Length: 113
Length: 117
Image (tube, rainbow over all chains, first blue to last red):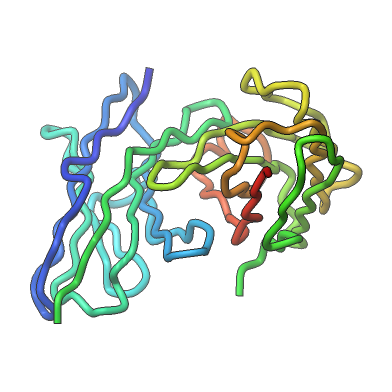
């Protein structure tokens, strides 16, 4: 069965610092991986997706993620954090051949002024 | 603004009430989903409709009754809910069915925050 693990339920960075949110996946077949962001009182918004076309995926708001098969990882990064990046971030894997999306537990990003 | 519209945004109801949550999308997506999200937790899948047919029911209690009247609308009928059903209910849509469409992301609405008294 496919699954994702997000390391760290909370991450705190200073404004302007590098953002690194970790995600490891478990899948017996090439996975479809996604990062979503959820701001307070809102739904989930797609940041980026990996679908095997390229290992480095660029998303919205300056975020990007690199798919590393050897490490079974899909970590999310942003070179310089903004206050507006404070939110909950979910890594997710799509069930191949089906409809289910398996979400990680989420990582809350705090950005300090 | 999201492309998936959910109404109402907030709902407070008693345990004996009957109410409905509504979801609408006009992106031509043929898969629609209901999720339940508790505070500080990821969304939990409840139901999936594909081409207006119920494809997945994740063993949801019968007090939740989904309905997909057409390709753009998805309803969730609520009856005799329990306090533990208080949560954010999210609707989502995506292109097509599973298989080759598994690489397509889901588009989420902003949810209905439901409180059961």
